[in-house]
Image 1 (cartoon, rainbow, N blue to C red):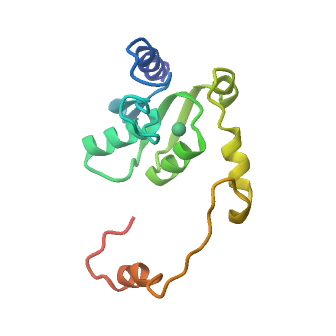
Image 2: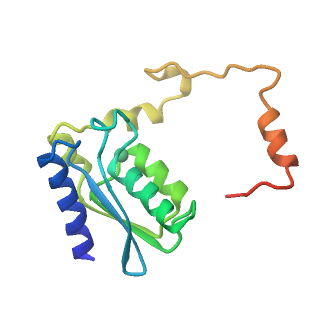
Length: 154
Ligand SMILES: [Zn+2]
């Protein structure tokens, strides 16, 4: 287990020395084998969602040919942010291990505390405008889904 964590940390350190993105790395392990690896690529790919855990999940799912990480473990160099935690819950690995904490990340300039505070607010009270915009077609996607005979549930 410690070797997998050291690989995640090394990916994070390499990411900084190669000016590839933020100091974050993650690996996905299934049955003792690495099936995915990710590094933070926010700045190099102009993608605010390209966090190490998300990249590792995408890599593992592509390699495994699946949209769920059953029986997988994620080793991350740092405690996942709220976005990555959401992705982790959707991917459904059995465990997540992290080396440094969100407090460590905040001390280095990566403070996600404001997201936790924003999530706790009602939609209308958030800094970014979020409100329902109802149109007559609002329920069409769900009606299409419920009546579909060929859907792949997840
Ligand atoms: Zn994240």
